[in-house]
Each structure stands twice: as structure tokens, then as C-alpha cells.
Length: 293
Picture 1 (tube, rainbow, N blue to C red):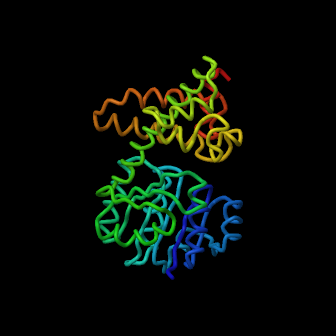
Picture 2: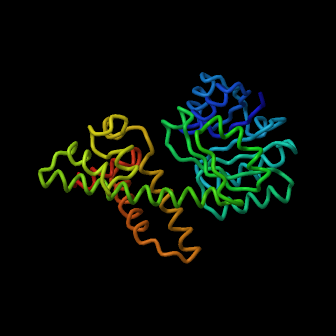
Picture 3: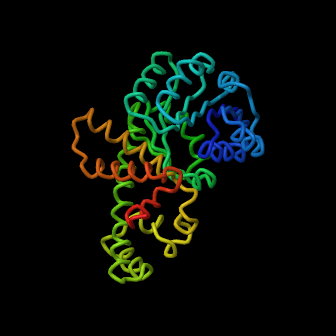
């Protein structure tokens, strides 16, 4: 049993913190949202009044925050100073690669073990403890973080040095955003051609059109019962968050001189969907936009 500070116990962090409690750890939770703290309390976390209070004497610090600016403010403003010298620092937020590298380098200069460990899997996986972690940071920091990450996920993969977890995450989600649009387009076309959705799924899911977007997250109701399409696209991974990741990918591509025309088109379509009120629904709900809704 170790003591873990968990900063940011919202939709994703709440489920992750709950799984650390289930694993037998003492989890000190801090968040700015009272509803998030109420949920964390109900899941067995100890509620504290600040990030610094959570970090004081903790064996590990986990952060799950909205953007790079929040992560930088948290670590440079409180956590680096409050953290015990032997604590491992784990940032599970999805942020830009440059900020992740910068914070990782700052941690290294302070002789702090730190990794960037963004996740894949959405809220259902966070609650179930089946997330995939893409981890960037030194080998020793990864070794220290791995046992904690394994209690929140089913796959923990070392992607390289500081910032490489974020690089893997945004590249992965650029694929996901693009393939979801292509999958949704195909189902809309099949529908308009008179092809039954279940029949099309039965064929394409076993043919060369198969992808995670189809077999795990089918964008139309019916073929995959667990898909958010069967819940009017509620829950899952919000379209607004997909747009955030696609913008991070575009920003990284610009900085690296990489050409990403499909990623750019996916970002433009998700921006249109969000602008039309789709930001809070699951990203597979973009099928509504493609239907003309």
C-alpha cells in the first residue's frame, strides 16, 4: 500500500482514482469541482484542500488535467515544491508535446522521477481499469510509475523519453478521429444505397474495412451493443476532446514539418460538429453531421 496524490478527479480521473483505492492504496484527491470531489469521496478517496496538501509526503502524484497550461501551473506552482524527493510524478493529462518535454526536463533538473502517461480508452475504460497508457520519460521513472499505472489499465507501454507518451497519444487519436469519420461515412452511404447496417457490419467487420472504429465503437446503433451509438451518443469520449487531440496533432505536425492532410480534414469536420452543438456527445456522433443533421 502506498499513498497517492490524485489531482483532477473528473470524468476520467475519478474512475482512475477509484481503481487505486480498490487496489488498496490511500488516495488523496483534489479537484476544483465539488461534484468531482463528492464522487471521489464516495469512492473512498480522502479529500484535501489543495494540490500541495495532497502531494505532501505522498509516494506518488498523479495528475489528470485539461490542458498544458494547467499541468505547467500545477507542477511549477505547487507540486515540484511539495513532492517528496522519492515520489514518482505521473501526468496522465493529454497535452502538447512541447509542454510535456519542458516539464519533464524541469523534473529531471530537480532530480524528480516523472513521466507523461496519457491514456486511451475513454471513461468506460477508466472506470473498469482497462486503460492503455502511453508513457514517456526516463527508464527509471517508467519503472517506478509502472506498478501504479498497471492498477488503472491493462496495457502500459514505454514510448521513449519525455514527451513521447504525448506524441504517441496524439498520433493514435489522429488515426482514430480519421477512421471514425471514414467509418461513419461508409455507414451513411450504405444506408442511402439500401444496405442494412447490420449486414454491412457483418461483412466489413470481417473484411479489409475492419477497424477499431467499426468493431468496438460502431457509429450506428445495433451492431455493437456497447457502442455509445446505442445510448444516443452519450458517454464515451466527447467530440470536444477529440477535437482537442486533433488540434494538438496539427500543432505538433506544424512544428515537426509533417504533412497530415487527413488529420487536418478530420479536425475541420470535428470543429464543424462541435460548433453545431456536438461537443459534449461521443465523437462517433459525428455520423449525425454526415447525415446532414
